[in-house]
Length: 286
Image 1 (cartoon, rainbow, N blue to C red):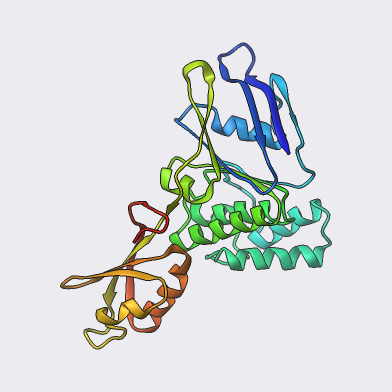
Image 2 (image 1 turned 45 degrees about the vertical axis):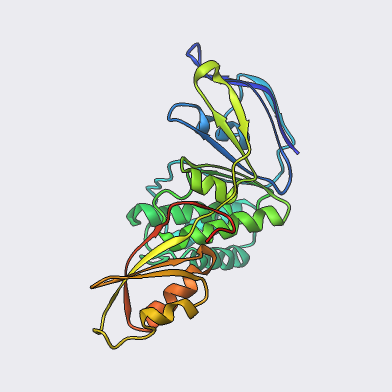
C-alpha cells in the first residue's frame, strides 16, 4: 500500500505547491490525479516516484520497481530508441540480450515509426512519447506513474496504453496518471483525486464509469465498388453505428475493437480520414 502522510511541498520560501496531502493507493488500483494548470499535479507525481523530496510529511510503501513517464520527455541523445532502451534495461538489472528483446517487443507493440535505429533527438513528439512509455516498462513496474501520457500519441497507441494500464493493475501493480479529460479519467481510473488551489486541498471523487467509443471517418480509395458496403458494416465486430454521407461514411466503434475494424477497412479498400473519440457515454449504453 502506497501512503502519503501529511505531505506538503514548496520550493525554498516560495508558495506552497500543495499542503497536507493524505493519500493511500492500493495494489491493483488505477488512480487519476486531476486539477487545473499550476495545481501541483506534476510535482506530486515527482514526489511519489522519489525524484523530489517532500518539504514535510512522508511517503511510505513505495515498491522497488517504479515506472515513470514524465510530462516532458525530450531526449537530445544520439542514441537510437533501441540502444537507449537497452541501456535503461541494463541499468535496471537485465542482461543485454533480454534488454534488447524487451525493447524490441515494446517498440513493436507501441508501433514506433521512423525506425528503431533513428536517433532519439530526431524522433517526432509522438514517437518520443512512445519511447518514454517503453522505458517505464522495461521491467514490469509495481508502481506505474504517468504524467499526461496520452499527449502526442496517435489513436491506436491510445488504445495500447489503455491495455498496458489494465494489465499492470490486473498484475497487482498500482497505476497513477494525470489527464485533463473527464472521459479518459472515467474510462481507466477506479478513483479520482482532484487538486485545487483554494487551501491547497486534495479532494476525492468517484467518477462515473464511461465507455469511450471511437468515431472513424472513411472514404473509398477505389470508387463505389468496395466491400464491406455501408449496409454490411454492422456485421464487423465492434461496429456500433454507421452514418452514410455523399463522399464518406462515419463509423462508431467500440474502442476495444478499434484495431480490428481499422484492419478490415484498409483491407477492403477504404482510406481512413480521421479517428477521434466520440462524446462519452455511460458504460452499457448504445
